[in-house]
Length: 424
Image 1 (cartoon, rainbow, N blue to C red):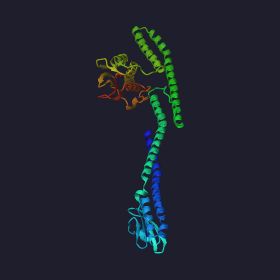
Image 2 (image 1 turned 135 degrees about the horizontal axis):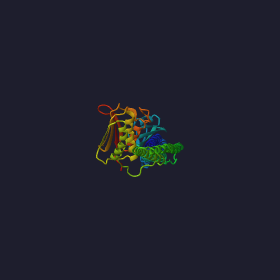
Image 3 (image 1 turned 90 degrees about the horizontal axis):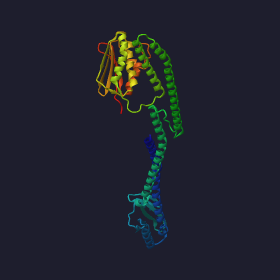
Image 4 (image 1 turned 180 degrees about the vertical axis):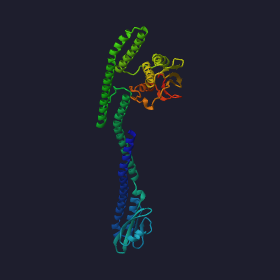
């Protein structure tokens, strides 16, 4: 923008300079020619009295003196054909002046000035002088050079003013862009210092107001999530009491462990909602350990529903750039979809293996398949919240990976979660 404004001002300045200086240059040249012509005409007219009344010797002396003083050729043609002064032949202009008509004519040598002198007893005499082109253009080149320098100075001044004006516009716009990018990167405390024209100051104030409003809405949302999560503690407490009252110690221990895991998840959700800050340092999670732990948790339910589970884990550890709780939530979402969208007795496979620079987690079942738009947030085929695949997708994208939906050979759904490596 700054370069474009400078280019625009430069173009306008050049056009203005040309529009004013070119006619002025032509006027200066014309004025120089007219000044030289008037001076030569005045010198020639100063001889008219002598030529019209004096004798031949006086005319000759006077003409020679004028030639020496003026430095230009001056000739006097008497009616009898005698020529005094600079040697010259009668030109058409001289012949025309011999009839009593004074005139000025342009020739190859310069501008010819002829004056008819009447009143002599022997006829009309003619005074002729020539103004050379060098005399007519004397000082014009220097004047044009001064005008050209003046034009350059005006253009430079215009560019300097345009650059200063552009800076007053570009700097606030650049700050608006920088703050916008900071807000996009979750730096919600970024603010603009309003500067520049009134319109840009108004935009800066609006951006600050928008950032403040977003921050307020996020705080309210986090508090609401935290409050909602906190409300789950009461039914969790009741569920723990029920688990402890079970007669079978194994069932009591199993249910209590599940309640403890759910309580830890709720506590983590509250902490994440209320004190969400960028992670410090490098996030590293062993995908093998996390996937093995979550598959072991779901294997109990798989056994109860008659599902065969095939677990294929590459030798660990396999570090990925996803926090442990988020990876566990993503695995739970994928396995939970298997139980939610397939009938009891449907077998499924969980496979974890390196894939180039990523780690591929594959969950495949022998059920009816999955719709391509199920990854859309809120989309569900079984009346659930529709957030499971979206949770897995966001976990993969946060690590630089992606989520792929497809069908396994022989039928059934296949979900591949590509997890990126830890970021330095």
